[in-house]
Amino acid sequence: MNWWRNLKGKFRLAEPLKNHTTFKIGGPAKFFLEPKDPNDLKLLLNLVKRYNLPIFLIGRGSNLLISDKGINGVVLRLNAPWFNKLSYKDNYLNVGSGVSLSKLVLFAKDHNLSGAEFLAGIPGTVGGAVAMNAGIAKDNRSIQDLVENVTVMDYSGNIKVLNKKDIRFRYRTSSLSRYIILSVLIKLKRKNREQIRDKIKAYLKYRKLTQDLSKPSAGCIFRNPTGHSAGRLIDLCGLKGKRIGDAGVSLKHANFILNLGKGSARDVCKLMDLIREKVKNKFNINLIPEVKIWQN
Image (cartoon, rainbow, N blue to C red; front, top):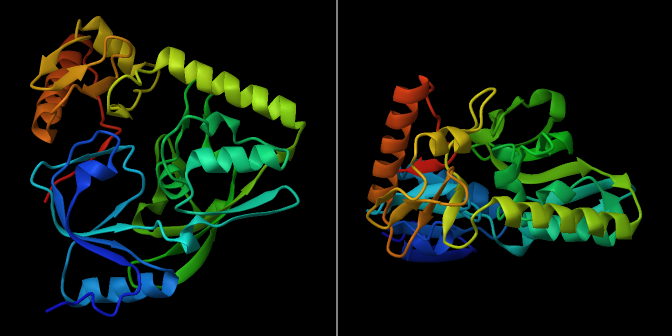
């Protein structure tokens, strides 16, 4: 039975998920859907519930490691024009969850709005960035600093607006994971466009100097433990350059695992387990993954 036949958005069967992650790793999604708008999304959620199908939400896949076997369920991406809207009034931007962070940063700059520059170079969407409270350790900045409210849909199809005080933001996580983010209202400050441009350039330069962008990766693989740098702990264990299959610890930034060619999720998970074991044995610190791991 073609349960998806009444949906208006895009639909694909056996879609290779490696094409939708920055790691370039992941097997096929049994169903891959991009709803047209919130009404289409609500219909999709009702169908998923009726047919008892597991559902997974993906943005740009920048913080994601997907099983080599793929996902035996529905992978949902909010990439239609409705979810990519950007508008502003005074110092406020209303941003669709599917908008890329790079597009947000440039839109704010073009309208002389400052505050989002630290997001430059992060390869995710606004929805994903808010859900995981993305940021930069260098300045202790995170996207929660900008958020005024978030419009969400729960998995029963109900839409609500959550004010900042209703959301629990923590280091690289939030209470929003139980919802599907539709749009975000952020507050910025007026500033000279040249100053904004210079700040964006500085953040991009910093990321280029400190991060390994030479091969596909998911960015930092572990969260920084309180009072420590995960990358430094891994480095002190002598693990830079350590390789399992085609997954290798970066020589430039030890908290990056790189896909060196045909890396698999199995390779990456084995390497992560080794890193956690070495750090635990040497420092008695448990590293917690920052990357999300999808397995059936």
